[in-house]
Length: 93
Image (cartoon, rainbow, N blue to C red):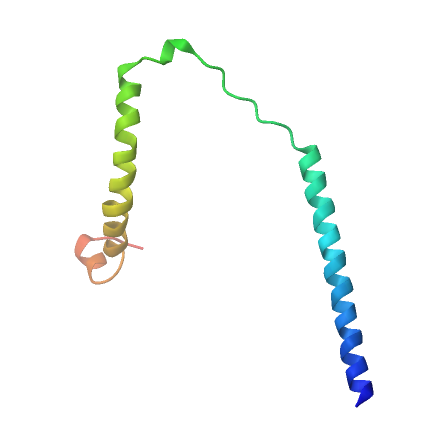
C-alpha cells in the first residue's frame, strides 16, 4: 500500500513541476511581449473634418443602426436561413 501512495505523490510532484515550468514559460513569454510591444501611432487630428454636418449626424445615427442590426435584422436573417422559411424566401445554399 505504501508503494501506491508513494507512486501517487511522485506523480503529483511531476505534475507540480510541469505546471511550475509552464507558468514560468508563460511569464517569460508575457514579459517578452510587453517589452517588444510598441505604442500604436495615433491618427493625426485634421481640423478640416471636425465640424462637417454629416459627421455629426453619423455620430447620432450609428448607434441606432447597430441596435437595429442586432435586435431586428440579424434575427430575421437567422430565421430566414432555416426551413421552412428558407424555401419561402427563395434562399439557396
